[in-house]
Length: 206
Image (cartoon, rainbow, N blue to C red; front, side, top):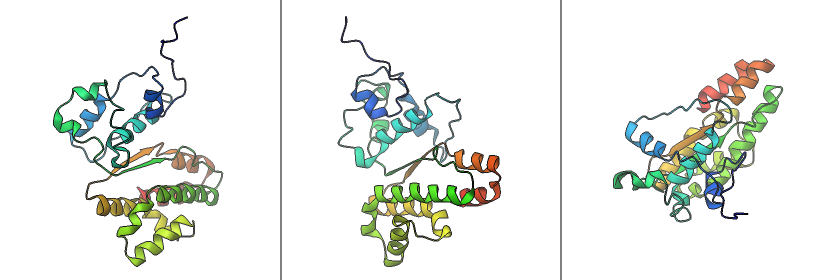
C-alpha cells in the first residue's frame, strides 16, 4: 500500500488545513490574480452548492490577511499564484481582512435571527480587538457594547462599515471584506415571514 498517496478531503473547506495536510487540491489560486487585475470594488461568486465557495473564500483570506502573513509565508508554495508577477505577489499578506460566514444565521423569527447576528458580530469584533488602540471614547463605547451584545440595533447595522474603517485606520491599508452565504438570513426571513425586518437590517449592514 502506497502511504504517499494524497487523500481526498471530503467536506474540507479550510484552505490552510487542506494544504498543510497535503490533501488533493484543485488549484484555483489564479483567481487571486484575476481579482487583483480586474480592479472591481465588489466581486460576487454565485456557484451551486458544494462547489467550493467557502474554500475559495478561505483561500483569499489566507492569501491577503496581514495578520496571517508570517504563518502563511510558505502556504502557497508550488501553487499557480506563484507564477504571477512580482506586483501580484507583493499583495500577499498586505491587507486587513474581515471574513464573515452567515450560513448559520437562520431562525424562525426576526428576534431569534437578530440574536444570532449579534453573536456573530460580537465574535467578529473580538477577532479584531486590536483596533481599540486607535478608537476615541465614543467609538470604544459602541465597540464594547457590541462585544457585550448590548448595542442598539442601529449600531449593529453600521458595525461592518465601522470595523472596516477602524482596521483601515490602524493598518493604513484598504480592508478586504469576505462574506460567505450572504443571502442566508434574507432567504430564511422570506420563508418564515419576517422578510421586511431582515432586509431593512441587512441593507444597512452591507
